[in-house]
Figure 1: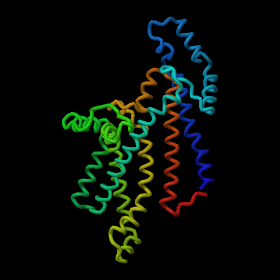
Figure 2 (figure 1 turned 90 degrees about the vertical axis):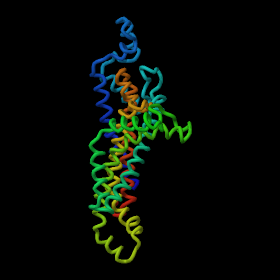
Figure 3 (figure 1 turned 30 degrees about the vertical axis):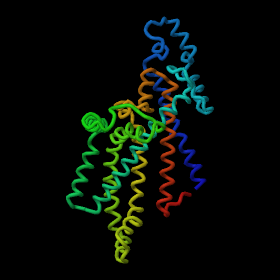
Figure 4 (figure 1 turned 90 degrees about the horizontal axis):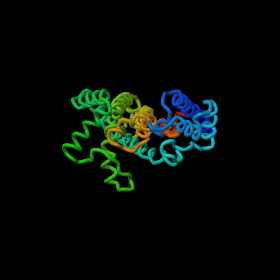
Length: 314
């Protein structure tokens, strides 16, 4: 396993550096001058040029690339052009919000997907099965921002159970944190829950037709044991893939939800940083997302080996 983890770590490096290089080039080639945006319309050409020299933006692009690469290797991501602070001091507070939002949304999606998928599979071709399938199709078809607006209108405007927008960190208390994270997480995770419901239903139907399930039932084992110990363990293997893909999707797709609910997350920060042409902050944000996605993929591979003893990594 250690040998496999070492090989997987080496494969992670291209996954991280390829998007970073693309972002570096696209930022430099896109129109807009960070120095001009920072100084405003009243700045003179000499003032803009002096700031460009101070920020190193007047250097040839290959020199900027080498300096940027050196900074990544030495864990020095530079200072934000707009905030005038080290990027490594700015990123964590934004990244924590996005990671918490993703984890809560993923937990909601997994819970809904497993429960509804299991209920649907155990009641195949019955009215409840058809209702779950229809709900899953609708959930897949509708975008997250539509769910977000619907949840705000229903639970924040009409019922007034939750605030319309804003964010309370976990340090403010479980209730205060949950009040500001539940609606965004629900809006973000409900579409993935629909995908997991369909996958769980399909996996369970396949497993329930396996000979070893028939044998377990013929031996007189309780249905709870047959489903919980044997069927669920096998059906969970395809779900692991879906959960891994969903985690990456939720992490990268939280931008719209963070903007709608005014959450100080990484996606919202990246949008604002791109608008300001804050090169170091954008690159630091993309690096953070790439690292988290790479770690998630590695965890998924390890979970495969835990769930299925037939899998042996050489």
